[in-house]
Image (cartoon, rainbow over all chains, first blue to last red; front, top):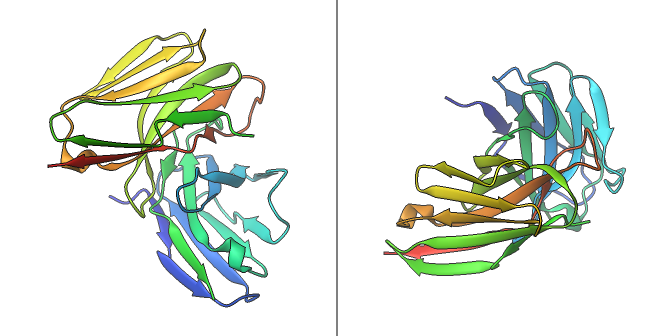
Length: 113
Length: 113
């Protein structure tokens, strides 16, 4: 049974054209995360929500925004994608505190043309 | 800054052999986790070891933690082709309360039959 779902699995966008990636969870977890992962690199945390509280990492570009309209859904908005934003975007959840086991979705691979 | 560093970066073995991966970190931690990532997929949690624990087992996995050396190892015994994946350690630094895990760069394991 899918627990963390990401749509779409592959996304192609044009340079500068806004794009939204979505994540949903059936675990009823309080915390949701967005990571960016480039080839052969570690996942890099962009931001996370603890319930409705938004926590932005200091080095996350302003180009990246997020919304969490309810417990189940979280969105990643890239306002003006650049070529350097091509990557795998991973959504994850954890039950409570930010350092418990995290449950990842399958990821969305973003290609910027 | 990077907290966890895995060693080696890449490891190639034959089926049936044991695979050992190491992780070193810089600051005191509450816990350390190991995750696995198949190519093009999300991460899957394998095991969590707390700072007051020295060793944990889960099936063919054995994890050790040496807080004095700030290092951990993941041993996969009797490896199978299906173990081919990237393996990441992730730490929960004690000096960053409330923030998320910090992932290392990973070890890419290739098991050939």
